[in-house]
Image (tube, rainbow, N blue to C red; front, side, top):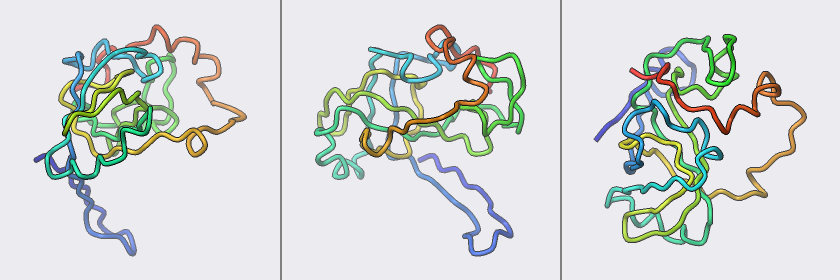
Length: 175
């Protein structure tokens, strides 16, 4: 199994490392990052599956009652991060934490997808903006009352969010 270890050295009260082990693999039609929609809301109807490893199948109980789920995954094809990046929908550099760029200090991605069905250890999903073979770290149910917030501002994206429907990964953050 794939495990990513982060040395924490010197942070008071913290363990020496953090290791995550995938609970499954995400499958999609996207064989490389280039061309992938950059957010799941722009991937309407794109189908995929999740293969949950057998030792985690029991954890899927009652998940079929949710229409949408949050996937937390490892950007396994991201190149090394920098703290300043030029995101897909802007021509300027921004701090990586003001973007959703995949090349990050901890390359963790999140996507909200539609759960279509579950058969044993396979989840059928739609609105997939994830590369085939991506290691899945966790699944959480999407609950609008918990997850939707009214916001007052969206930073530099205010003038660029209209580009989302046509924006695709151009490979700039891939190994």
